[in-house]
Image 1: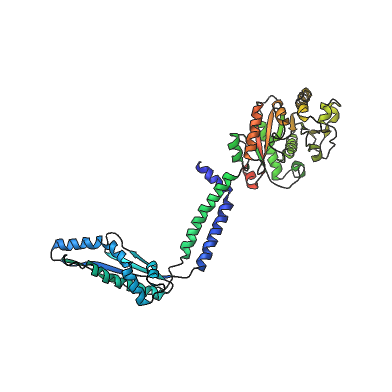
Image 2: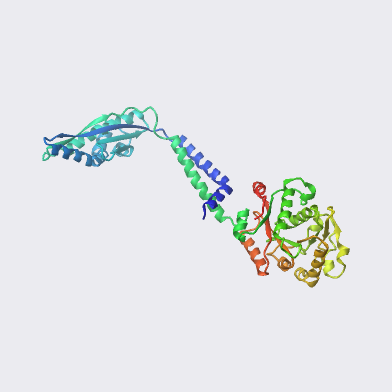
Length: 442
């Protein structure tokens, strides 16, 4: 996966990331407030060589003290030191608790050991640190007192522990920063998993990956406005989005020998009829004569959208009961003519694939500048796949959050099986910010 893909996921799922960070930081803040303050006091011990008359003795003793410092640190945390100190101080929990509260640090190449004790009582922390230091000095000198060596390792306090004024735990800033980092990682992980698990098409990037670069004709934002946005609010951004679809459609069909355009979708409820209606109005507004045909002979909607008679129309003509000129209806737009679906037939696929349908399309293309055909979805029925090869272009409506990636891929494959490809797609019901960015096709 390329870097831009990670950026895209982060941009799309930023709310998930922020929410996870807030949860983790809030939890860390609560835990920090609930923690009992603990204080840390430290003492430093200095180890040196004593005795020895020659330079080699001194050098040997210095190397010996440095090399043994890690062992001295283990002595400091041994029961030989901890139990007597805990008994003498009355340390809560005894030697085992003191051992857990004590840390030793012996930096490499140095002869200084730092002994720290952390306790809820600052006074006890300081007393215990100093006591452990004193006991360590005694034990180290006792253990290093080898009569066969001319040198002795001596230890002495370099800095005694003082009563700390501020608690060392909890460290609020450290906890919150760590929580923020953890929340960011968890949030991004959740966003990544959510994106991988999401099988819905939600963006133009999703469509392009599935369709191998199908041109974007336009992006229509989600909303609860009227179906005929081009008539109700011709100055609104959504109406302008339909005009962009009409303009881009001219570019992608410029080489076609047909001037008919099929509007379809993968599944129902993707808004194809609304887009077909507004697209037809946008084309008519530009001065072209447009015929809008409702070829969805299963769930026709064009007549109801324009509030016209739907009992006669396409099926009436295909059934030989009337001539096409007799069933055409005018619309509120001067350059737009409508052909409703008519009475629902028992054999829609056979009708739209008939020779009479071909003859009707030939007549329509001769008499109108543009013919827009609203057809059923591709996957439930075969009507759109039958009509597609007869048209000059196919507009595939993709509803964000409605159609799955597998359904979209299957729709594209259905068109390819009839030697047809979509001219482009319209992403419908997209997020408003995505719609605002979509000004070009490609």
